[in-house]
Image (cartoon, rainbow, N blue to C red; front, side):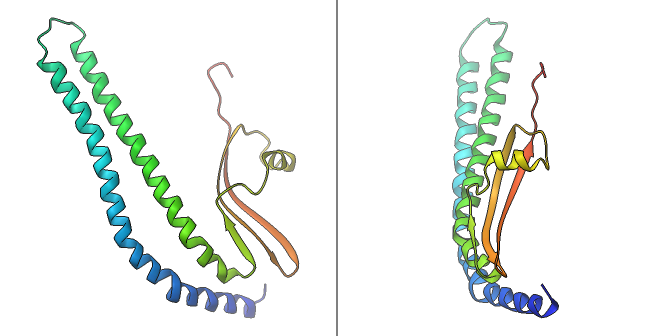
Length: 167
């Protein structure tokens, strides 16, 4: 890609940003605030449920020695569950936003499409042998298209190798 082509790409990208992306994101900001309130409300409801359980348990007159352990368990479990809910709901919102905006952004690059599912198989990744050992992966963004007659397939992925205590 020469300087002239880069300048055309830059101009096209700036037009798409100004005409499509920025107005969309301004409107999306209202939706994002509503979604954020929804996520916080769900997490707060989970926490309040566990606080209510702890209060109910504490109000029960008992001579149990493990009372504080159970209170600690409910507290930690409530926090963990709330954290999992927060992360899951946030990721879901981000993916929905990407599905709406990425096709618009990718127009600037010409004949390309964006996918949120894997476009390269794990066997192909293993066969390339760039990262020889992985047993877990996360694929986020995939771009498939053509530039000057050359087919291009780009995948953003995270490859990991997790071990257990016996490994």
